[in-house]
Length: 357
Ligand SMILES: *Cc1c(COP(=O)(O)O)cnc(C)c1O
Image 1: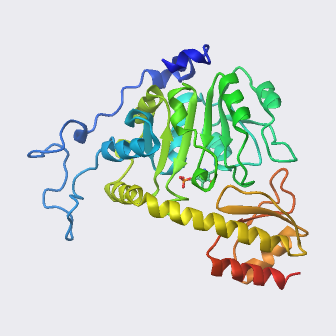
Image 2: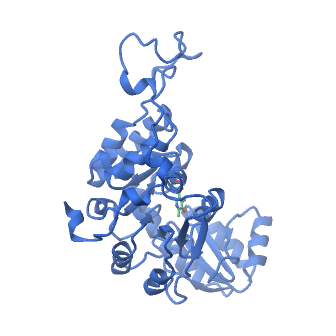
Image 3: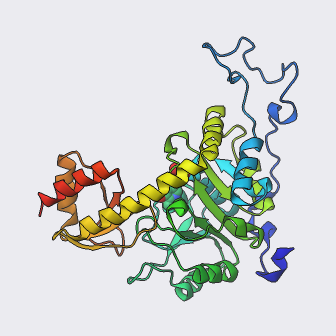
């Protein structure tokens, strides 16, 4: 219904690869029955080889119904708009597989940005076109991006807050791209909870071509459980459900993800603490003579320009302090990316940097 207001020429079926459109998905045993005398899936009837109260000998729910419902309520969408994957990486991989014909289709991204988009493009043999962010504020160059779109461009990747620059993109510019590009626009919101900007997740109800990625790896502190979330219109989610591995999310991950959501208050409290610490760390870095600029960040890391980034990176590593060298990325000459640590960790980093001045 809301679709009528915009993007009239968007045609999902035309965008989906023909083999995926026709795909008959694997039908797993646990889709039909979850209870009863279950002798249908060749599970081990004697159970796990250790005490277990989670029925770990049974396959997990292939549709993650409970978890998706909780996520939907939390972000104000419907469960049909939610896909849960093995990290955001699975979401990205599936979207390539659904929309991009290997050796033929193209995607578009705006470097400097997250490396996984182009790694995944290479894996799928998809050409990646790139339009650099603007040099001043790392913002989107909307006209140049729309000009770079070719007939076979299927996906546009926007990462906001952006990794490694840390900033968010202007909302009006992002909206222009969602409305102006006839393919799929993926907004990667891995760091959204560290930002003052509103998430785009609930807007997938308005925009049929909008896909939003989030993850429990950053603000929730659950990188180890590998849980990524994709929000999109129901038809796109249905395709993702069809293409994914039948039991992609295991029971232990579902349990910990639910625990995470039930502790959203703590997540918000911690996120606030990290934001305060980010400000402190930025101030301290700016006082160092070897630091030329620390960029504004709405994520849990800072990008900083040093006088000799490579050397500083290597010297720190010798002291067992590991940060990320990003000087090889466009517009990031002599830049290092620093994750905001605990107050104590940040103090140790600053002390070490002082010895390198
Ligand atoms: C860390 C990060 C992710 C998270 O990926 P997961 O597979 O969910 O751990 C996604 N996108 C960006 C830009 C990131 O920096």
